[in-house]
Amino acid sequence: MAAELHKKIRVILADDHPVVRDGLAAMVNQQPDMEVVAEAGDGDAALTLFEQHHPDVMVLDLRMPKRDGLAVVQRVMEINPKARLLIMTTYDGDEDIFQCLSHGAKGYILKDAPRPEILSAIRAVSEDRPYTSSTVAAKALQRMAKPSLTERELDVLELVAQGRSNKDIARRLSITEGTAKTHVKSILTKLDAISRTEAVAVAHKRGLIRL
Amino acid sequence: MAAELHKKIRVILADDHPVVRDGLAAMVNQQPDMEVVAEAGDGDAALTLFEQHHPDVMVLDLRMPKRDGLAVVQRVMEINPKARLLIMTTYDGDEDIFQCLSHGAKGYILKDAPRPEILSAIRAVSEDRPYTSSTVAAKALQRMAKPSLTERELDVLELVAQGRSNKDIARRLSITEGTAKTHVKSILTKLDAISRTEAVAVAHKRGLIRL
DNA sequence: GACGGCCTCCCCCGGATGGGAGAGGGGGCA
DNA sequence: TGCCCCCTCTCCCATCCGGGGGAGGCCGTC
Image 1 (cartoon, rainbow over the protein chains, first blue to last red):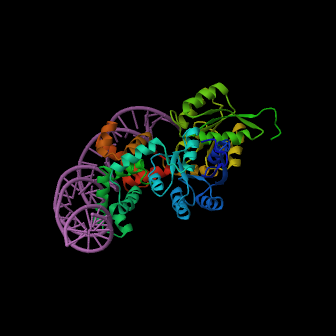
Image 2: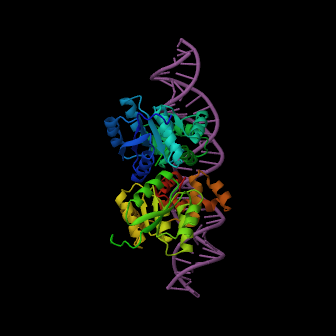
Image 3: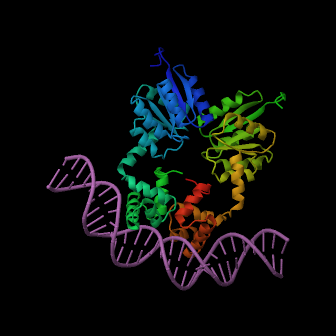
């Protein structure tokens, strides 16, 4: 398969750390079968460059200024549903990866992956084959088994994580305190937590919330 | 100052992301006045390589497997109090940086810093001049003004963040529930929070706890 | 139409939590 | 020695929180 010399894999890198971009670029450009055609430091730039270059693969950091990885994935898939996106991030507990994958990203890989794994992920995605690191695959299975929170519950959870009281949450969401309590109780049940503080801890661990 | 050709700055890089090491190495080795003499992927390796090479500067990631940046700083300063360490991390809300700086690290810089800033930080530290990014300096001032938690309070805070009840905390720390409550109340006062959940949120924001 | 999920609201109640105030012992520091 | 901080423990009390229910309305799908 490395014998296909007719065309190099054209790659765009999007990551807000110059250092990481340098490392990836060096790694990619050393390969005979791929090359970096552009680099972006934020989500907006990634979109612009994607439309300019139409790369074979775009490597996307999940956490970026201006527009995060998920937003970029959504927009890119609107522009070109056949786009091949490889999500790259630091933390493997991130809930967003599932969102990205379900929105059409072809692969997911951790930043601390060894070089060969990163390169083979890029090659896989370039050929339209999905690539998911084993740890993520395992988490996906776990996740399927567990009940997921509704939109409203996520709204409430976010406020709970900020340390708001039920009364305060009710005020901010324009619902009664009783309803807020109902949501909180539901969250506790689904996350298998005894207190709101534990729920926040669990939510953090599962990447349901950030910041 | 770039005219001092008699000796290159000898640098060790310690970071658990191969990609980041590649990026830094490429950047450093392009400079006429510095070179990378070794790379480490975890804290233990960093220590071993430090003793082998006695570099002019060691660039240290705060979050590393086996032994984190702070532990490496402490150990290195025991071995050689004159060692020049540059701490590098992703997140600027991290409380550990102050620990590192007070334990003798010479500089601190964010991973998303532009290339020139990283290079000048390495040069500064190599000349034994402190280097601290402006955002960190600002935070340090803020921090001085605010009351800091005691050791015991941090113990309690960690358990609170895990979602433990006062009773549970008391059991784990072998104190009475009343005492646990006293600590929690003190934490709330110092962090200016109304509830334990808000305290956890504030603590996260200030980098007092992790995970 | 019937079913089920989601959001909204309601009830009761015991235990946990937070606010206020006090107090003793130990260790460090002037 | 005296002072101050930290850790420990105590008591009181209003409030919040979490567990147990139930229930109506609005959506979809089957």
